[in-house]
Image: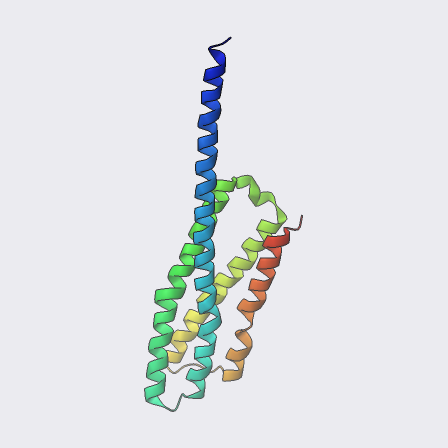
Length: 166
């Protein structure tokens, strides 16, 4: 009986160390997820604003050339990698929480809204293409209006994640 106690304590220490490592990993990936989300959201909020300036200055070749470079760099070098990392770290967090979390309504709602953000992201990529090729028919007002889409989705996602409805 005496030899059983040290073995049991050893198992408990190992389990505690595993739990600490999992929690440390979870917090690390949660932080990385949030950093990627902030970077992605910054781009989603800024790119339509650049489109506004691009459309308002479409007669000025020098200005539109600058806007095209800004749009391309923002979309391909900041936004797209940030979106990919947001998804990657989000999937890792789901894995660390256990896939049964997918049965909860709040995560399903978040998933749907993040898919909508991803679709919006791809739409902005198409807008870059149409602006570069001078086939854009959208007005500056249109881009001002769609600039609110990521804000609304972000607000919904934050409230869903914080309050976790049933």
